[in-house]
Length: 434
Image 1: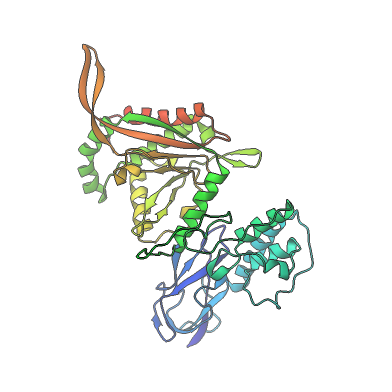
Image 2 (image 1 turned 180 degrees about the vertical axis):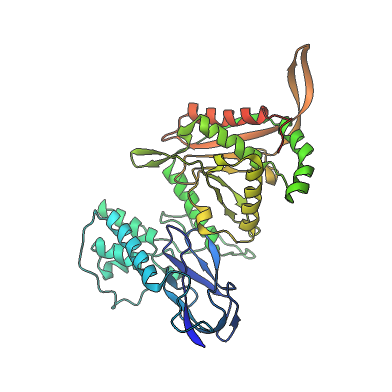
């Protein structure tokens, strides 16, 4: 029997550390290869880490709540593998090199490459992540000053955002506002109005995902001036077509055919017609994205929201879109998504109609500049122009609402995009095959 290290695996291109949430096994437990051993959290997703070996969990090296670099050992497993055999994942040295490189890049980006003597953190009883320490060193922030920063992380831990906000305030000579630490306002450093609490009220602590959602939504409203345009579309053709082919599709492919892939296809076609909606803002520069990566908002059983991304959505046919939409939605609800499947989106859709809502004003997913909300499909009387005159008919109608970043998207472009999406839905070929 040999002792082998279970290391923190690489979980995405831009992820270099993760927080341990829960150990699913305890010392002495038997572990099968590829069996989940613990749950970890990154800035994008919570996920389970499988064992690279079969054996017995001998020792846990990283406790719940610890922030661990990719490639660092987190447990010892007694295994039947031959002595000296390496794990099929990155080595601790490789992980450390990657993490240190990422930390250095972030620090240098905020200091134009300036270098300072390392601060002595040994005198502090407070925990600081390697990233926070490097930024403090590069910005020449002494430990005594660092300890005055209020942390918004777990147990008051100073996060990357906390120290970067402090650095920005420090540069302009402003006094940074402390972060208020209570359930409702732990996501931003702006002054807050204290909530009133009465007898019988229930206080619910935000979970990690809800805190992240709250922070990103506040940031988006602060960063981008939102404007929303509305269009009502006649979607009778796609309703009738779906009713005609959904049985055949399920029998052939073993899966359901929802409206979502039809909506995504129309959005992709509209983006091709108006490529300047597929952009991102970087200071005074506009980055026109080559790929069309569509994010689709998915409501989780917990009530939280997650946005998996369909990369290169323009390269799928309708059947392919249907399959990937179902797969991503299913794995999102089961917490089985990979971190890379939640990043890289260039435009987002949100189907508020699934909740019975007729329209919404969605908040943009930064750094994108547009998001479309799709309302509930309703039967309505409508005037139709026929060769022999106007008639009133029962039609299937829905509202589409497009929120866009008015810094770079004016009303003409924002309104034209959502109108074009509606046009593609209305002109859908009812004789089309799938």
